[in-house]
Image (tube, rainbow, N blue to C red):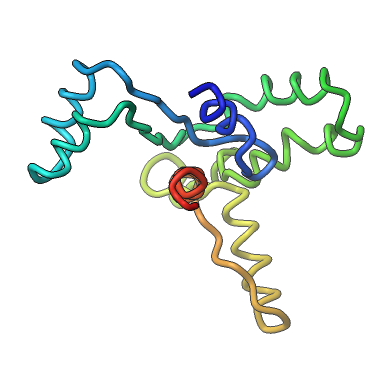
Length: 156
């Protein structure tokens, strides 16, 4: 099981933010609770209880809270260039869309992250020249990364 947990530390994600956590459940009581409240159908409930372990993948919807820790770990490892470290904090908040916001009406109502606004503006400006990917919010990005991580373990 340690190998499985170690793999979660190195699954790919933008700026190594790892917006996914994996819980490895082996306790029969916890598996029974999960089976009862989260599994649809008798077959899924049976398999959940019968399995030696269940991997639960969780998306972190606020990955920016770990940027300072990731920055310190990257600096301590000595494997990153100074240029990478210089832009890590700004680029990662831009990537996740968790920077300051532009409000549409000064105090309340929908707001747009500055980074999301800029990404959409650049995408729109460059789209006639070259196809651009759809820009996503931090929730979509985190869920997508959780899906990618879960696929790493389920695909042969």
